[in-house]
Image 1 (cartoon, one colour):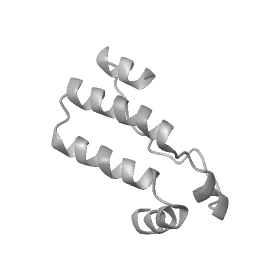
Image 2: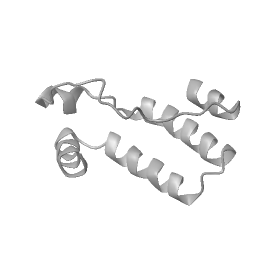
Image 3: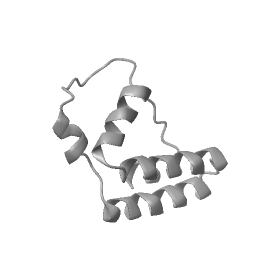
Length: 86
């Protein structure tokens, strides 16, 4: 929760404008990617706490729910999602 603590103390966080990491997308990427119920329970707790504390609203709740569904989905669903939303 390092990013959460930073936001609570006024740190500005932004994306970098340049690509700094390139990697190949292989079949193993979708099967070995972070997933599982234990991880999702931890992320879910963090998302709920941060959206309430930082007052992000219902859009953030919807995004967190969508990410939960995607991360517990089978590898073939992730592969399609990456192709569509990339």
